[in-house]
Length: 358
Image 1 (cartoon, rainbow, N blue to C red):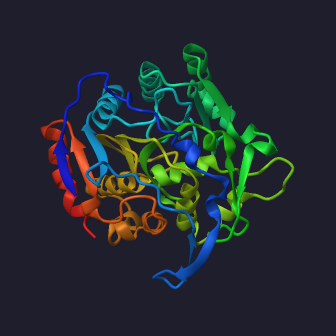
Image 2: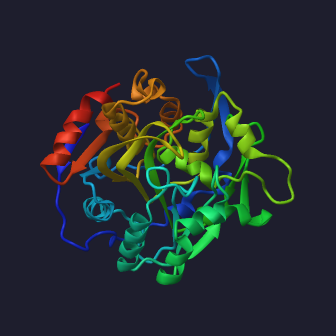
């Protein structure tokens, strides 16, 4: 892993040639090849998809780290350093974390979401859509309480309550090659977007996920029920001893144009809706979910967290290990480049470096 300070002129952010990132997630994504056992002797299927690059031109996955207690300023600084591609002229789907409407770090902060919308619109993005499926709350209620529909009216963005989608708006992916016993259904409006933005929080998860960062935030893109069908996909997930592997597997069907992790505050135990809160004072941004989650897990460890999150190498945490097997991002600390804006950020990156080692 390397740390690297960089600066860019204001409003160069996001204004690079458009790349239809989200559209690259094709319905054939979950065709399979033969599986091999993992180190715990449980089946570890493989998905037959070519890995999508999340690397910078230097060959590493860039993670921007901003030390801040101000989510809005930190978000703008992170975007300015990262300069993510694929926004100008593209439709954008923003996937926040609205498991409940509790304040951050339980859910996505509304002012942060507003800052993202303003940055994308300043970059001449196309239609922006915000959507989620809550886990513990009723989704429309949570989105209302978080002020999402007010943002929609104010900024002209669309909102989608994923629980309310029609059957034809869910794309089915087969079970073969995954730990999902009957496959899973993924929201088509997300797959059809030109650019997908994953906005997640920094927190532990007491119900089996261990952590809920960018990989886990994708669970809200998957159906609980498809209209007209009785099968409960979330029951499959939450009752499985392989649920952390299943979390990684759903991420294989899409590639984010941007991952933004709000770590201004964090749950270091408990979660996802309530827990022990600490001031972590950080915003992370990148395009590689593995790299973001590795750095995010290292931050949780540096703050003092649960035994499950602290055990062993970060790279052997189930979500991360399976994501690496699937080619979703960085597979070694040398492939992660932490980009910082100032001495405070560099100091934090230096503190995290030993925690990222294999």
